[in-house]
Every structure is written in structure tokens, then in C-alpha cells.
Image 1: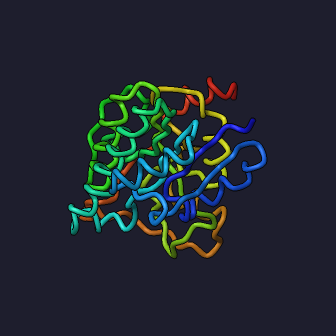
Image 2 (image 1 turned 45 degrees about the vertical axis):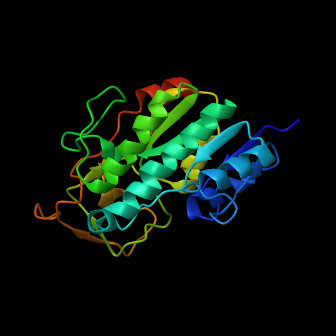
Length: 237
């Protein structure tokens, strides 16, 4: 019998890349009308009806990051309280929980961050993701994935030459996630450590190079990840 997976935020772009795995798994992609993570009664009813083996918690408020500075209530509700509700209901039913966090929870100064490095979010978006992590950490049947992902092709006209990250595309990340379903703890997921411009120009030949202005406080200067743990699990050199 196929294992059952529920992916929250099922109508989002990232979630769409998991549909190709529906032959191997019984995957459901509920939107907030079917499974509202802010409504405990609705959430409980949906989980009782579908009885998943795994929840991949993808639903979140993300970009623009400035929104998290302007509307902290929405950020807290969707990324912290919603995640707490998912953790609570998962723990009641012993459902394996996979939580999508962010590489931005690290200090983002020196880069090459390991899972065991100290955390110090730079903006409210990152704080909201770390807030969710706090609840997930309390539930031992869980996996926290600190992701550095973006859409393909690179969606912006300009890209920083002096800001480093470990971006990979949604499709690549989805493939990796499906290989980690039975892992627990915390794992970084990303690609090569490089400038955003170096990454962007591979999929968007028209992208223009620009320099990061230190006055732009919301943009982390170096959120690159150490992927040693991931490579060890996947047996990659």
C-alpha cells in the first residue's frame, strides 16, 4: 500500500513539483479551504479523514520579505502559529512531520553554515521560520529542512554580484526532499556556494549584475550552506 503524504500549501508553486511522485506515494495537496492550518478544528477533521503517514509542511508566508516587517501579525499567524498547530496535531497522531525552514535563520555573515552553527535571523521572515522551528524541534518524529531555493528561471531583472547563497531550483529541492522522508533532525538543502548573479545567469541570460547596498537591511550578505551532512546521507562526493 502506498504511504500517504499531505503537503500543506498544496496550491503553491513549490508544492507542484511533488506531483510527479504521486505514482509512488498517495499524495494530497489541500489548499487552505480544505485544510486550514490556522483552524485547529478544520485541521483535525482533515487529518482524521485522510490519516497521512507524513506531512510536508510547505504552507508559509514568504516573499516579499518586507511584508514580514510591515505586517507581523500575518507573519506570526501563518509561519509560527500555523506551524505550532501542525506540530500539535501531528504529535497526537504520531505523523512524521517534515518542516520547510530557511537558510536565513543563520547569521548570514560568513557563510558555509553547518546545521550545528548558532542561529541569528537577520529579518522578520527568518525569525518567523525559526519560530516554527522551535515548535518542530519539540516533536522528535520530525525533520527540519533549511532550504535555499528559488524558481526557475531566475525571476528578477537584477542579481547581486556581492551576495552569496546556495540556491537550487524548486524541482531539484523536491527531488532531494523525497529522499529524506525518513530522516530526523535538521538538514541543510541547497546547491553550490556562489554569488546570486553567478547562479541567476545560468537560467536567465538577461539578468543584470548589481552591487548590494549595505543600507538594504533585509538582504542577507552570505547565507551559503555547508552541505556535508546532506551529501553524506545521499552518499554524494
